[in-house]
Amino acid sequence: MSRIVVIGAGQAGASLVARLRKSGHAGPITLIGAEPVLPYQRPPLSKKYLLGQMPAEALLLRPAAFYAANDITVKLGTPVHEIDPVARRIRLGDAVLAYDQLALTTGSTARRLPSALGGDLAGVHSVRSLADVDAMAHDFARAQRVLVVGGGYVGLEAAAVAAARGQAVTLLEMAPRILQRVACVETSDYFRALHGANGVDIREGVGLAGLTGDDRVRGAELTDGTRLAVDMVIVGIGIDPDTRLAQTAGLMIDNGIATDAFGATSQPGIWAAGDCASFPHQGGRIRLESVQNAVDQAECVADNMLGAARAYAPQPWFWSDQYDLKLQIAGLGAGHRHIVVRGADQGPRSHWYFGDQGLLAVDAMNDPRSFMLARRLLQSGLPVDPQLVADPAADLRNLLAQTA
Image (cartoon, rainbow, N blue to C red; front, side):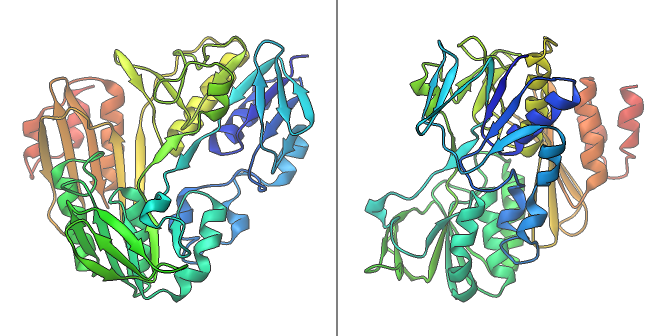
């Protein structure tokens, strides 16, 4: 019977092994994770878990009993040191484990502040793993002045949590605007106003020159010469695909572990899925960092490991919770040329991205109806009339009739 090993016990790894068993694979399945905990949800880490509103047990994707009932061997706290793709073996410390097929779901790693900028000082934290958030809990409970470095969704979510606790929050973004890499100007403006209304001091086009303090962070010097007194720093400057094992094994790397449309890597018998993997998309390559992609791509790879030969066709969607607002994003807005705004500053609102090929994406703020409609429209692939979207009196259900 085929022996399948999965390296990486996150959302993608957990989804992949569950799919294998559900699809009838009868051979041995081993899931290996470097962290000492079962696969868990990451999105709540910077929100409910950080606020103490969700216990660690509630983060688990599945209880231990699930893996036992499905005869899935789980090795936790077990870093893999080497892959031998020719002999089809992996090395874990002094132990060697053989495989017939191997899946890499190693995820990503948080970018850290370099030590030259004070990144090694106590009180400087990243938000990526359960251990990261547990390590910052003591500082977070006592800090009065919080500096957030990075104006992406992770930074904004952390700022929202700190502001909701009554802490004085300053957020730095080196780019000219927050969310510049992932959202349109209108969405950046919306969230800037939201955070300003909640007391967050957002400084755009300003970087961090360095943190100050003997052993613990006490202050920050900004690139515009400003000096701030701070008690704690939360770093949200992005993530990188974890390709270390893949590189040493000789796999092709291209913005992550390069796979074909089916999830196969450049080495026979080795597959990849989730944050660590890039795949062909619309004539180029793309790597998606989302829970939805981790689940969908992992399940597609599991099917293909069992012979399905099913090309992965992503339907991207994302979300972010900040204060009492839920942002839901359907599609990818890169390359947009025109934005249509529906709704007022207060209440449900949506930003519709249009490009040369029509509708690309929608950002929906407390507007789940527009989000669900957008997902259906994007899946249909049929034309959407921007003028109808722009008409505030229009019933957007007519868009579905238009594409029926």
